[in-house]
Length: 240
Image 1 (spheres, one colour):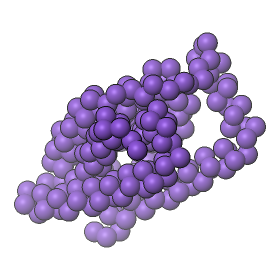
Image 2 (cartoon, rainbow, N blue to C red; image 1 turned 180 degrees about the vertical axis):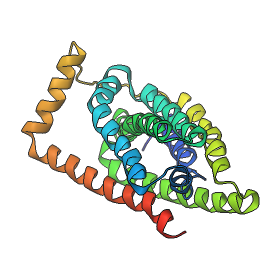
Image 3 (cartoon, rainbow, N blue to C red; image 1 turned 30 degrees about the vertical axis):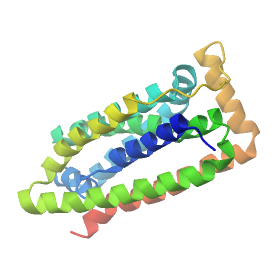
Image 4 (cartoon, helix red, strand yellow; image 1 turned 120 degrees about the vertical axis):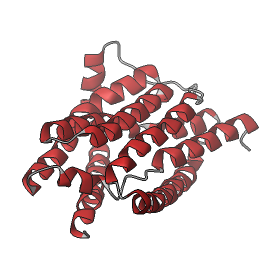
């Protein structure tokens, strides 16, 4: 049985995920961005900036996470996400939206490792075999919070008539996730860390290239992520 202290850390992680996923701006950000651009082509290029940024940041962010711990990278993830959301609200030109999306992609790159915090917490408690059950519960919390945030966002826009305000309020609300992440306790587990950043990056590349299973999982995650993201970003435009 998990100790009360460990159980509290897991519950705190769930509360953090609920706060992070409560995004009232999700149904409206694409509408705001497209409304300030001159063409669908520019809108697509803004989207491309996100994926290029995510690809470029992925391995360096993994190195930072291994060297400095999951708590710090989770805090950085939420700070960059808050800055990206605020950037969407402040932006009115193509270049400013590209910059905001690159900042958002850095937050997304850091956030991919948040599940590692949960796994390593369970590993420290010697309950790592139960990770699928815990991560499934975590996904349910995220989806429910997404749905709740979208519903509140709809009521907010109906009352104010201002899409942009959802981004400003969303950036402020996301700071709650930053505060919760600051309360995390870094898991005490061994990590394989190379002596230099360059060697750590090369080691990561070797793992991906030599292990077909790892490469396949990464490819599947990228495929599913792109598919869901494209649905989320373009659906509001065609439901107007």
